Length: 580
Image 1 (cartoon, rainbow, N blue to C red):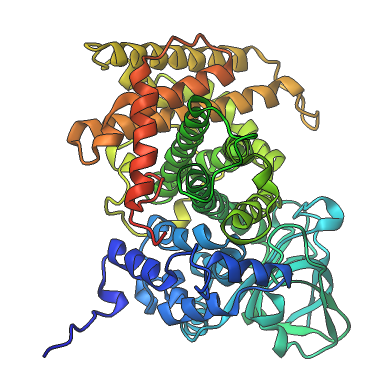
Image 2: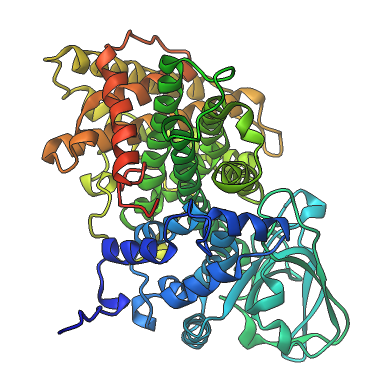
């Protein structure tokens, strides 16, 4: 008798690594599963991360997913990281953030700006199961990074650190912290980043645990207060002195994109819970509060379309880090800005399906409420809505004048989930490139669309309407008066920035459909049904004309919802097998 030998994870392609992780997690609805919903909710009530879940991720070697290939890890792209970490976020956002997301974000700054020694030591720390953290939050100043509470004063060939940071995730167990500090210079070179091990600080310091929040209760937040004599050498600098703001602005492009893309996992799980509630025996709402079948089907279909709409933009932003790094500042800000709006609508639709069971705090239904609370926390921080608009606003006039209707459209690889990507090009991440290849997709497809079926005629009408919205957006931006230096931007500009994010989402949907129908690798994504419903939602939000949609659209998409639920496949663009 022979026993099959499993290949090491490092040798497995991404789909097989994801399948291995799903196998380890098991069915979340099984009461006896140590990493199922029942046990995860018990840990949440204790305001703790699930020890069983963290042990499982240690067994999987998840930390290796955060380390680049050339340093002994498995990280080859942001796209790969999203695909491997989504099962964790489908299970528990707190575990996803506390175990891995924060470690990757701290380490990402090291991969971006660190010396070879810093990169090697950080990789060794992660591969040994250690944690890395990043200290940027300034809650006393509305998360304004520039008003840092930590100062780095030159002294004795190094720096004396003083001040405090009120909220740092994983501080109590981090072997390395990327600490943002204010220096002695002003302007764009006013901040530096120090890579420190808190345990090795020579002077007085205090770690103050932060009270559990409503969402992501298990995450280990703490504040750092630095006393006297905390001297660190110049070797602690992460990048050149004064490069902290430049590092942060590039870092945000990855953190915004990754946070938004991973959030889809929690919405995916919530949709699965709502479908289970409606269609599995013993889980339906009582007859008194049950929705009529047509309305239930409409709510579930609408939630699925919202998820696909958002995932299209999230996937484009993720892959742009590699394919269009100069334009990533646009797409990362847009996808993070739309996170609370689009996915908030999705969770609202699903709450209608659940009815009063939304308030259940136990078992599978209790997991929905936890996902709802956890997702709200992800929308906060330096990557909040206003910060994202502030990234977009300075770029819009230049795009309107030089890019829109003149740009070459984005490459097809941007819209094909799972296609190979090149290496990270951190140094090419730009604050503003003046180019927008994604919006150009709307223009290109609008002139090439066939209209030989009723559904394609509706699709073509919607694409033309949204292309005209881009034209109107250009005209309105160019008509705005140029604000004087130091003058606040008017509310009209913020409204136009919001409309622009919706146009980008429409372009992502069109691009995903267009390139899938070219090769028919996924028959559902190659069908225009889901894309028509997605574009209709966007057009309605923009106040554009919305054509009537053939009944086959709703039917086709609702059947896909039920098919993926029955076959245990994820609801996102990757359409991968899930454990339950």
